[in-house]
Length: 224
Image 1: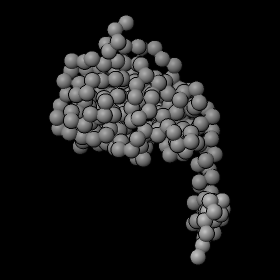
Image 2: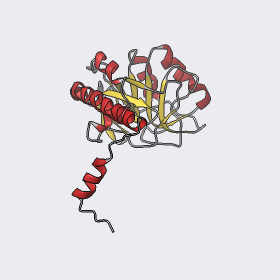
Image 3: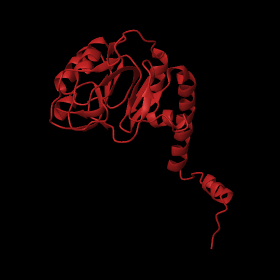
Image 4: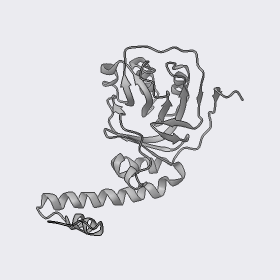
């Protein structure tokens, strides 16, 4: 084992049926029912042509400005995987462009999440692939390493374990720990149904706003 230059190819992925159910609810609902603790920090932009994705995490850690291990991850990931790349949040060098995106699309990869920069924005937007990144720059990468594939990473302020459930849409990215996915998806489905009922009440002209006054009363708010 060489820390910094190692690849793990075996992992236990979140159940495919759970990932499919999660696709029917917004990422925000999944985040809400995890006490708002599992959303990646703001700033991730949906660059790809696919704007909503769920699937198991396939992780890669790259040195800032270097995409050697991301190339390898795209060769190893399975169809339906969401490749999650910890690029250190570096915005000065792009580590993904449309050629890599086309390769990922051809392999059936669902999405790529980059805590860093990408380039070829116009080309990536044409792909049937989800791409989320912190920014874009024309500056290209090196291909020297080091890096790791298939190990836990830090991305967007969260720890991502290979096989965790990733849900991403135009709001951003949520990470559901694999062992909690069943309970989280069920709770998110119930939460989404409750929100749908709230929207209907607004559209029908009788929204329930009593909860606001209850909270204000509990906080001891006075009126003059």
